Amino acid sequence: MSVMQIEVGSIVEGKITGITKYGAFVALPEGKSGMIHISEISSEFVREIRDFLTENQQVRVKIIGIDGNGKIALSIKRARAEEEAGKAASAPSVWNAPQKKQQAVTGDAFEDMMIKFKAESDEKISDLRKSLESKRASTGFGRKNNPKH
Image (cartoon, rainbow, N blue to C red):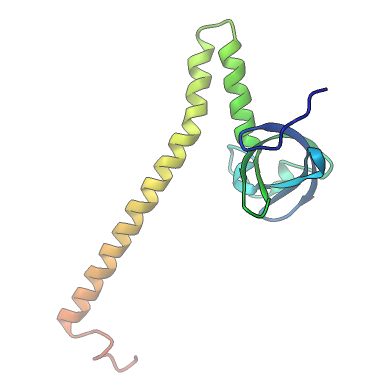
């Protein structure tokens, strides 16, 4: 049996040891433990973690980060995506590989799209606040002239 490396990018097996509102804790090889954040459990929306995981369940997880304090961040959905992409690459059908590869890329593309959306949204909110402040100042209805403040 091969030894599973605890390093970023590795896919390892572990056992769910605890479930909280924000994630699940996993016992890993070498006596280590890590956590799967709720956003890394499934590509579906996860409202209740217990709908997807149970304590003592064996899971395959990808190690997506290890911080300076040795805390290990894990992902089930990235492990699945990588394994599906690997299966697609070795599949005999030429039709399966591009489709599966596209699904693996979609996760990163979606995250990039969400980051862009948030930045644009923050910028629009900032512009709206400036516009509102400008209108308040020009109408004399700002804080200085409003007796309630």
